[in-house]
Length: 218
Image (cartoon, rainbow, N blue to C red; front, side, top):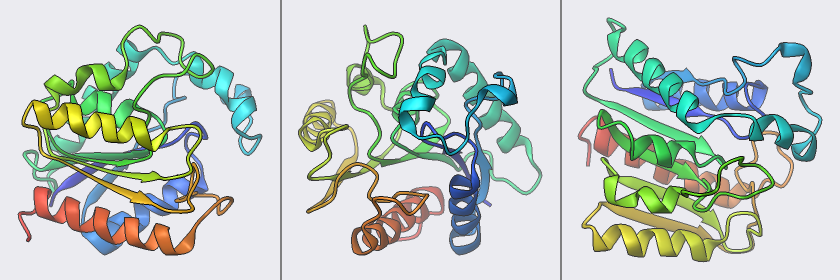
């Protein structure tokens, strides 16, 4: 079976991301491994449900180089499971730029499904903004599909369009879907800020994308 690494937003490992992973596994027939970006942080330091502003300082402490090593190890673990086809592993995630960065880092990733992933880092949530996800696009190893809200003030849809334009110049396989009247978090895993119709469209498109590139289904 194909495998999918699921990367959460700043909220980390919580019921919303686990529910998403279970739904992806159940409806898509994938083996899903959910990443905990705070796995090296004492549990008492993580104020679950406290909101983005409370979590942002913790998220900012994540070192990109160390986190990519953790993602490498996660992919290797997933690929070695007897039930998983190690040559058919994708990555998906919300808000965080790491699904994109990881897809430009590890050649074993076969598909990247982005739900408003960062295109440019932000000083408020990223310690190092010297190199942005878009700066790595020449090294994108796999097809990419993005879902972005037209009214997103955190991750601008104009940045997503710039990513697609730059990726296309390098002959990368990319497709972008944008959603009117949607701000950041329209696929909100907690149900706050959720836009049901757009969420349903993004889910259907994303599932088809993963089936196409991880299972070869048209």
